[in-house]
Image (cartoon, rainbow, N blue to C red; front, side, top):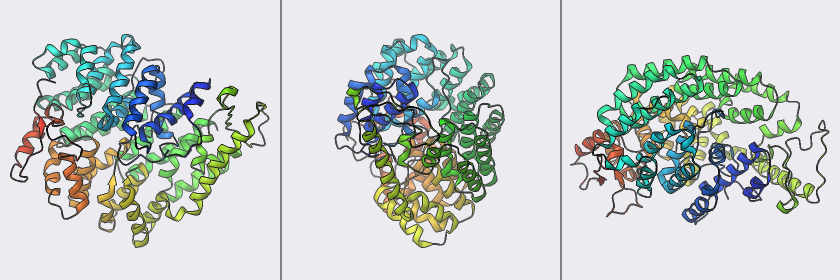
Length: 575
């Protein structure tokens, strides 16, 4: 158990009535199953698929998975598996029968190692007739499965059930393109076009450009913003030399942000937009997020956003002062505790009305709040179990306070403020050697700030151990890859981008060069991109239909670099 919670949260989730609490508790349960440290991981996920996911309603699956990044169970992503969701997500459009882009991001990340979970979710949506409500989702889901490299995916079964005529086509990509043309809603059509662009090299720019043009017809700014983000990301994998097109996308992102209303979505958009630039650009949009946050009423939503924003704001002294002033004026004393703790956040949910058969556990957001005159349910085990949760939280928080000089987040802040302090670098390096250094939003910003200051040589020894960028920080990594000639920065960026998805044409030269690197860790990571140690040499697991013809031709140009080329499926016509 990576989070250390003293109870199976699925029991609680099944018992509560409040729908938001149910999502949060199921998210804790899913996080433990997907990103836990159990030795029987594959079996654990298989049981999750069979016993839980397949019997769960689509709305509950989506809302719960999108809350995984907020869970305590996940704590930090386990090294062997990708991040499963974005950390900063927009509110869902409850009036639409949609599968949001954030959920697709989640499924794309999961499929690297547990593709059968993605299969189960898609099949559950089909059986629950979710696609009957919104047939325009079908091409998107088919394209999602088309892009799964893992040989563990039953993509043919998905195609048969959702788009059976696909199996009869000799030119699958052209058929998918024609299918997309029949989509009426510009939001779904634009999404489908950029999905197809990932695999259709011959038409990649044409598809991305058409997708971009269509965004002008998407009425809801939050939806348009998310589509533009995906186009921006994919163009860096497929058409990285299209600098004018990339700038046009960024300009449109900024204009779209100005039209986003609603405190929550505006804060999320400003945080996400801050990763598309550095220096004053980044600080400007984080300041906007902070100003917007200050205008919100004090409620659950505001406290959760403070918790998410705090690690990023901590980098800037003046913004941190403003945030601390905001926290100091919170009326509810427990809110102050929540935003200054880590494990205590699990207590931050509504009162749970749970039958005696389910442990009689009540967790209140206003625990120990002197101003709260609400009557607490008189259940025999209420006080004991409530105290147990609070004790677990406070003990772990106390441990963090005692060891804060060794805490990764604190070490990175200290490194930013005192780059020449070798002790901080050595401590972070020690963590990296044991656990890897996850490229969280905070770490990405700090590394980017240090690179902007020309301090990359001071921290380059950490680069081989930086892994797993969260979705939001990919624009930072893409900028490292395209705008810096420094080999150390470019090497790191190429590895992070290929590990996040798969090898792509413009990264081939860099990755091939890393196969000859003197650094063991960098060389090993480059080797894993082509020949994963868990591969079956008799059954290649890289499909050309996903990697694309351009990438394959680039690999073939390097036939003299390695004695044996990586093996790939060459079935880009038949899927």
